[in-house]
Amino acid sequence: MAKVVIFDGNAIMHRAFHALPPMTTPNGAPINAVYGLVSMLYKVIFDLRPTHIIFAFDRPEPTFRKRILKSYQAHRPEMDESLSPQFEKAHEIIQSFKIPIYSKAGFEADDVIGTIANMINKNILIVTGDRDMLQLVQGKTKLYMPGKGLSDATEYGPRETRERMGVPPEQIVDYKALVGDPSDNYKGVPGIGPKTAVSLLGKYYTLDNIYSHVSEIKESVAKKLIEHKTSAYQSQKLAKIVTDVDIDFKLGNAREWNLYNPGSEQVFKTFGFRSLAKRAQDIEQAKLKETQQNLF
Image (cartoon, one colour):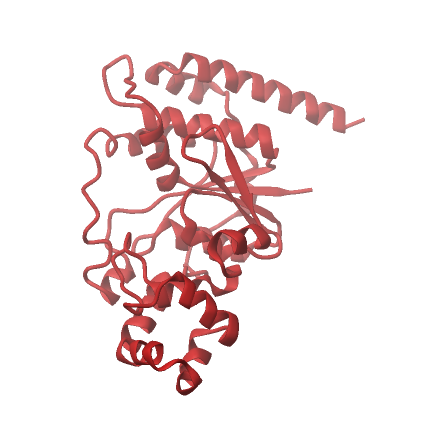
């Protein structure tokens, strides 16, 4: 049975960079985030046994969300100067593994991942540290979220999503429309916190229905909703992951991954990844053995 794993490349790179101590290539270039990314890839292959592997990354161009809100993500600090040059190296080693990488100018990796998940009717696991993507959980789609380090991870289906967020996946966008998101710098409805948002969505289910019944809501809460209605709907647009990005996607390409081949062997040497090269050989040998056994 096909099992598709989609990596949120930016989220995992950031997680790896902060989880691991500084490391350098033989030439002295920083490489710890790439090492962590590849280690996470190996863990996912070992734990989840994917048939198809895909990576998605952000692009440097402003996204459509910047047109909706100029201050979107404006307060985020500049990327660490030791991390930024590692993204090119991450692309290099992923491509050497024959794993396809997708991105789209004007959109975030989240939108590309949401689009791919929407295009295929397969069992999908999205590897990310970004809670925003819990809104994509449904049916055959789950999230696989690393913990503080890279050694442990939790799988999120609908039940786990509700336990963590207080609402089911299909309500997360409207939940964020109410509470906002400080990390992305949009406000939602100021004065409405998680407890009130969960209560409102529990009774009225959607943002539209909340506003349709605003006259029934406690006066102090209704006043905030009415005063900040524009912000609520703007926040809803910012929170919603796009699932129809125009990308040239071919699922078959994601099945061709091979961790140890002449191209990756050279990249392993360039980056000084001796132990990762040995593990790649072991994974490919185990994959070949499993394939041969399945023939009989």
